[in-house]
Length: 307
Image (cartoon, rainbow, N blue to C red):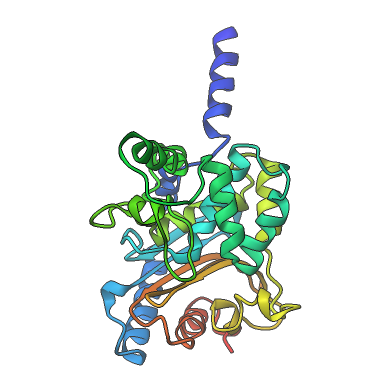
């Protein structure tokens, strides 16, 4: 009896924070992968500047909690995640139980709702116990880079193929933040659409860090389809723009001159509940791309709901 109790406690501890290995156990649905290929084929024809290796999509159907299934198109391909990386920083704030420190709640709100880079910079400093500044040398530089690996040390052992070490910049890094990147930019932020979708799944299932932390993160990610202010967009020009009236959206977008991404949990009026992540590279200036992907994807999964 005592052994069974100990094993149960160990199992509960092991599953409290779900990881990417469990995501890989979610059954792959060939029909989802077929639908994503149809979406990709049509989008690549519609946007000739976009190439197949610069497009990745992951979908998880969570409509029925007992029959969750998934599929992807280039879901394990690495991309620069832009501001989508802020989801990982958000999770680590809660993992370290820093969410109630001074200014952290406000910074979390601004990092996720507005995608503010100043708020993100502050939170990176908080979770890594570092600060930006002029160049460093020798041991001081090595220590700075090692401390910036704190998010990676949390997520990589759970097999998340991501790197979240660098701040989000509006005009580029300076000083030691340039040194952080490495001579070949080997420390640049990196993620896959599968990794992001997996993290969304565990947040949704209330298993990212803890149920209370997951609920708080979902609240931060909640996004009205008619944003109250222009600063809280991440709907128009992104996946949310194509959603039919009555849909509900939780999301985090990311965009630079190089990439344009969106990661979302969506509840459609017909009852379908889906996690959908789209990563694109090389056509970031085209604000019609992500809405077009969402519109085409809707014709595959919910034809009646497609605009």
